[in-house]
Amino acid sequence: MNLIEILPQPSEENAALLLHPSDHVAIARMALSAGQAIRPGKEAVILQDAVPAGHKAALRPIAQGEEVRRYGQVIGRATQPIAAGEWVHVHNLAFDEGSRAYEFPRGDIAPPAPPAEQPLFQGYLRRDGRAGTRNYIAVAAASNCSAHVVDLIARSYAGQALPENVDGIAAFPHGDGCGHAIGPDTDQLERTLSGVLDHPNVSAALIVGLGCEVNQVEHYLGARNPAPGRIFGLTLQQSGGTSATVADARRRIDEFIARAESERRVPLPASKLVVGLNCGGSDSFSGITANPALGVCSDILAGLGGAAVLAETPEIFGAEHLLVRRARNRLVADRLLELIEKYKSYLRPFGGSFDDNPSPGNKEGGLSNILEKSLGAAAKSGTSPLNQALDYAERVTAPGFVFMNTPGYDPVSLAGLGAGGVSLIAFTSGRGSAIGFPTVPVFKISSNTGLYHRMSENIDLNAGRIADGTASIPEVGREIFDALLRVASGQRTASERLGHAEFVPWRIGPIL
Image (cartoon, rainbow, N blue to C red):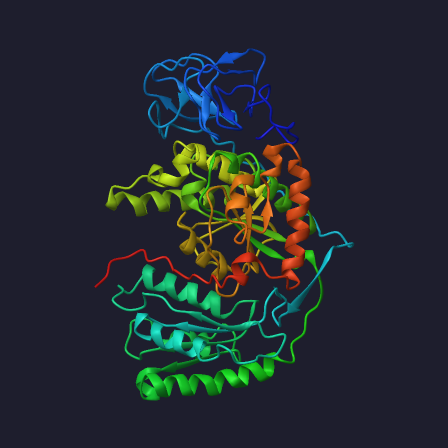
């Protein structure tokens, strides 16, 4: 979709980017002044307005009601006549859901066999064949009633020396688990917690409840235990209160640590990597630099037999026709559209729209509506066939490009990816983000160099060099892949070094 892979150094002559020959707008590489001439295409255009960096300038007159294109795709309709050289943004461009023609696949494209020669990383091979990039002991709350105790349990190990190959005691407190209606909401929470307890980055886990909540500890034990011998449970009511539960938990966790001490990293093929793809605090450069570069990394991973998992359903809306075209078969395509329709049904009772998604920061960064944001966000998935479409927190079982239905709200999206079994997450940002996850390393990629310098302690790699003209999309994509191998082998990400470990499950139902 994005035709530009190598950009020249910014100058007045190439101060604006034309991303596709059919586009009505060009993207400012730097802040541009009214009266300045730009020539992103064959014809020069005199700017009528000042255009902030990352924002759009009209390349020709656009009539009121006419469709406006970026990336060669429709991003909305003009709400008033727009002259050549005018700034195009929310004041004269409106979201219009419109209609998209779906090109459904014919037949079935089976994923290719992984090549025999593979890049390697040093990871933890689990009994079920999955590969971990970290080795944590997890302690999860069954409900809000035990969330504080879970925090106390994890904090009780602060400052205590752990074996070198035990990454820590990771707490999963949250505000749900009781006051739920029995049904889809409780089922989704149970699926989410099961996924973070039985995770390749977790050596062993403890689920802690009050004892009388809707989300009973027993749901995760006995015959329903997803990892017998690795997941155990406690309740405050049985243990005798807060302090007694902390003491009981520590006795069990000490046993976990002794066992985890014997687990060692071993060389594993890159085909065992499952990488979550997320973006947050996006700007207009996200779809030009960081996201396409991450797409190159995703294609490298898919070609090796690993999995790249795109999330955030609101941020593929408007680009879903491009993903349908890439589905391996009609079944996968239909499942993707079914998940999008399910999300629309979720929004309707609240009067919500997918276009509620762009945040004030997204808009300040040049993204006018969800269509424009989604077309750039979908670039993270590369060009490989879509092999699987999953609901929230379902386990990833297919190689190659996979989609998961999650909100665009970052902590909730990361919780779904983590529960689905991703062993690391690549996270692009244009405005800045500091989020992490308790047991999954989150690798941050900036879309512009200014952000990289402003939030250098939070960013792991600068894809803004693409817009600066000092690196190409394929070069940065390969850098991301190589960096993820190092992270998978134990190198700490910025979010890990800073202690970011957010966990927010998706609550979809009423509170009783």
